[in-house]
Image (spheres, rainbow, N blue to C red):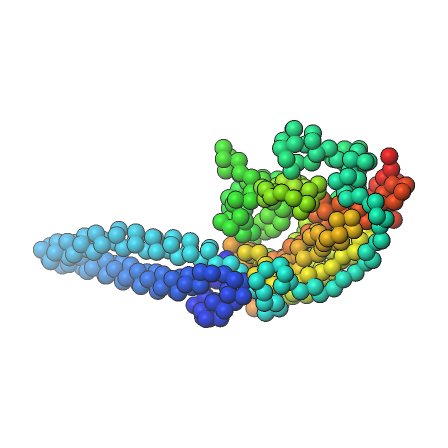
Length: 425
């Protein structure tokens, strides 16, 4: 959520930044300022009215002590008349505050000055490429055919058990997925992250805290009987661990990681882009989250980007790092780097990670603060998160890029986790 103070201090700058994100409803800024003016006016009127009531109540006491009951009764009638105005005034103030909050929630986060301009994904900026794109034989197979060849994922049974987009991993497919999860978690622990195994369902307050509500309710699975949402990413429960908490400055940064299944309702289109593991409703992902000092959050972002890059390098996958333009950014992000791996059989780039700095957008909602050591002042922390890594497209790229006549030869880093060097028939 954007700070009302920033909107009031720099309304034209806020509009400019929102326009970089291609946000169409810039008039909301003026409406928010008008509602804040009305809120201040009504608050002042309410305080003045209460002050008048308090003053007259004291005067009534003095009049009664002096035996001036007639004048005291007259003042009581004036107090009652003032009190009659309080209810409607409080109602107007409550309605104004509620409307102000609703309109504030409609504003996305402001993009960082580092965000490039642009309308859509075609305007994103490739900042780095690494790895070598393999030269596959002409009869190389896409991962959905390799899956059938080696019998490692059963899409048909998954669809029968639940529905389309819920793959059933089996045999060496399940083992590969477990190996990747273990490897990613171990590397995250080595980098100083603390591991968590969070709940897979969250309440409305938790989903609101990270910005999934009210922006992404259509993408989440909802359990109406309990009012719970299935998590779209481990970011949601893990970041909320520190909701409503005040940390010591010396406790920053807080570095957290966790593995969870993730649930998203977004897989609704057709064609090659969503075949096989390219897009599914349920998938496994390892997440990294940081709560940092505001002065060090962009340093932390670069550290997280370098960490994800190292993971891809050890998996021997060709990759590129893409800085998202304003028009392709998420609602809550201030700056995002996407990681894409090259799928040699499909001849296309597949997104496998997003690493983002949210600055105070999430922490203001969750009231995650820290107390400065020198001044004792309480400030909002910054929050960041990234996929390290999402498994479906990683598995797709591993299968396609590492296919040989003798099976899928896995990168050396996975041999000890998988218990073998390759997947074969």
